[in-house]
Each structure stands twice: as structure tokens, then as C-alpha cells.
Amino acid sequence: MQSSGSHSGRPDESKPRRVTDLLREGFDSFSRSQKAIARYIIDHLDETAYLSAEELARKGNTSSSTVVRFAQSLGFTGYPDLQKATRDEYRLGATARPVVHDDQLLFLVEEDNLTRALRTDILSLEETLAKNTLGRFNQAVEAVSTAKQLMLVGMHEASIVTRHAAYVFDLLGLTTHLVVDSSEANVARLVRLGPDDTLLAVGFRRAHPLTVSFLEKAGAAGVRTVAITDNSLSEIAGLAAVTLYADIDSTFFAHSLVGPLSLVTALAAATYAKDRDASDARIKEIRQHVGESGWLR
Image (cartoon, rainbow, N blue to C red):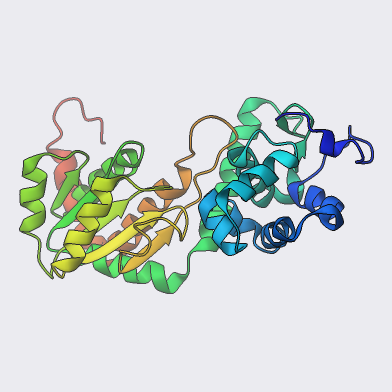
């Protein structure tokens, strides 16, 4: 993060500050548009963490260029840096407050990388749990567990989640179709889906266009739809009949998938619990046919 002359009047630059601290400190000196943006960030920190500059501008009744310039006036290189700082502040809260220095955004964490990564994943699981209601989850379980055919759609990093889902639901006896590319065969399978089938789509941030397309076409055909995504502004969140939310933030370069993978595990566990005897019998039969390697035993 760049140094900015606008910070010369701030008390004790060496001390860590949250984004909300910076906004409150400078609020009186902001223009009307900047005050509207600042007020919205302070009041909706969780939502701002996932808003684009254009979306935040609409919330503040101003322009995206004003949002970008405002972020720079706070000392950030641009809006993405400000957005990341708000996301870090919202996620980690008082346990590991993000700090704003003149040159970069750092964390006050005196832990080794192993501890830090695992503790962040613990926070992700807690947030994933908080984002979902039991009622919504049960609706998703019903749609998945009773599906005549279950199509699992996820591109790029989301394919890791859908591949795991295909594995566990295959073991439970569901007829699954895994879609991780745009092959013509996958389109043919989509066309054959009907009201007794379910499409489970996984996508994060701005979901892959193919995932959005499959979800739209399935919904139009009367297929039951479930989505796993990270925020309510995702395109697929508004398309699915049931949406489950998973936190995917991490403290390093790659997203954490512990949240969405845990949601899949929970869906599988609930499906298994609906008929334990039948599930146990099927899994036992599968493991008896594994062969000499016996890696599933």
C-alpha cells in the first residue's frame, strides 16, 4: 500500500489501524460522497468485503471512479486493497486485527505459518456455520438425497469441491454426473434432467459463466437446483432454489476450501443418516469389490 500525504495528520503512524478506524478518524474531512461511502463501509463491513467498486458506488449514490480515488486517498494502491482490508477486518475481527502501514497491509500475528493457516480455517468454518440456517440446509439435503440423478457442476477451483461431492454421493448410491468442463456430453446430460433430478452448482466470487449457464438452464427446465457459493452477490446465489454459503478467505494467495468441502460433507452425512442400514450395506459391498489393494478398507 502506498504512502499518502493525506495521512500526515494522523496520530502515531506506527500503530495498527483497522479500516473502520481510518474512516472514523478522517470522517469530518471527507466530501459528501466520501462520507456516504465511509458510512456504508462502517455500517456494512461484511457486505463491503465482497462488493465491487461499481456496486459500492451505487450504494453510496456516487461513481466508481470516486470510490477508487477515495481508496487511494486513504493510502491504498486502489480499491482491491481497500476491499481486502475490509474483508480481513470483518473475518478476523479482534482476534487478529488487520493493520494499515504506509507501505503495505500486514497482520499482527505472532504465529508460525501452520498455526496461522489452521486457525484461519477454524474461523472460516465458524463463519460458514453462521451463514447458513438449518432450514435451508435441510432443503438442500432433501433436494440432493431424493434426486434420481444428481448433476454436480463446478469449474476451476470449485471443481475440487464437486469432485469430492461426486465421490461421497457415489458411495451413497446416488447416480451422479460430474461437470468440470464444457464438453458436449455434459450438455447432453443436462438436457436429459427433469423435475426428479437435482443440479448442485459450486462457484465463488463471480462464478464461472458455464456454471451460471448450467444453473439457468436447469432452473428453466424445472430441475431442482442447489448452489454453494461464498456470498449473496454471486450470480449463482440468485439462480438456485436453495443456496448455501461457505467462507473461502485465507491469509495467503489461494482460497481456502475447507468451508465448501465441509458443507458437502454435511450434506453427505445427512443423506447417509436418512437410511444408515442401506448406506452401510452399499458401502460394505463396494469395499468388498475394491480388490487386493484394499485402500478403502
